[in-house]
Image 1 (cartoon, rainbow, N blue to C red):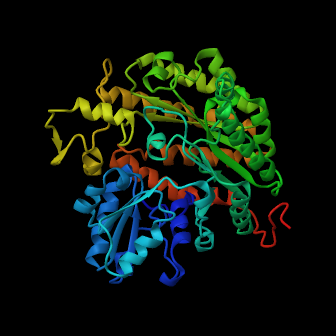
Image 2: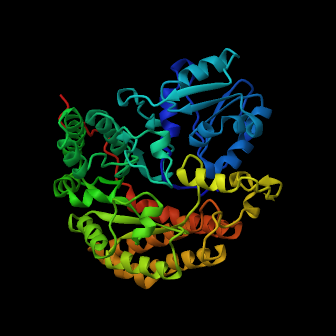
Length: 493
């Protein structure tokens, strides 16, 4: 699925490029969101690293087999290869796999491959923030990405049932220093990138409730630890505030930040203008289903989402459908909340149990003894089913058939992203030019993300690609700025 122009830079590809030993030569980065992989570019003895998540594992295995047939050393990494290393060997032609963080272990993998003696598997573990490798951004192809991505923290202390982050990256936040983050941001702004996603598991790792609970303990060591983490967040935001005013940051955050006025104010000063907030469900039963009881519902939910907007932070609200507690009326109630909360953007997702999550563990257990196969593939391994044959929904719902859940979910996308609704929301920007830009971005977002999910049928996927290619160029011009080659890190000696 290549668009020619992509929304965000694939940060991990450039981190591994940064970790590649100098003696190995300059690495070549291939992002199939831009252009399809060409096997003819592979020479015998090359080291080909392939990062996969569950949604693109099938394509990754195809690339691996092609690369191995050309005589390359094939290395698989990423979350899916961490969870299923044997599968990469069996189906992807892997010589070796890397589990966990690749920053420090990648040079050893390259060295062993060059010597013709790679191990069957390597474990990168969960490295400390001081060891995070900065991305080699100078390898970015010019004019191909709208946004850049920089990570400030790995790990999330929550335990949402649909998310694998807290199980794979850990629940202990590992925060980079503010200076390390700023160095990357300045490098990117020099190249013309104004809009940057802070690609964090959770930008708000310490809540006010966490501090209150720790303060109740007789042993104050946990309180001091949390206060230090929070202080580092504020230090980072204070330094972000010193960057050029035309820079805009976007991040991912839990709704609890809405109850922290000081944190929201610091975000605003730091040019953090938007955040993805996982609402997931608008009902108490739905939040219980996903282990997210710290979220609110009803009028309280509208108020908490409104707190972001009152701080001039735009929200992309994320909702999940197909939970056991969902009923037909849940869909209309969700749209009502999204509109009353004045969300700038929203995404409506169908529950898909992905490996590494509690939801997947529960679903996999429910299939014990079920010999159902699709195109010869066990139902419990849906990512290996050819795209055209994949079922649209995997979890049996107690009251609604899969087609109804899918139909109602698609209707929400269409209603929220109807042109009249988009134009009404475009009042969040001031000039006519920006309003037209808002419409363009909204249409692209709808086409790109409503029709490209894990279980999306091929017809919708093809339509998504056509729209993406049509709109990507004009959209990119809305986000980039003139290069600032002489920009210095604020406060640097």
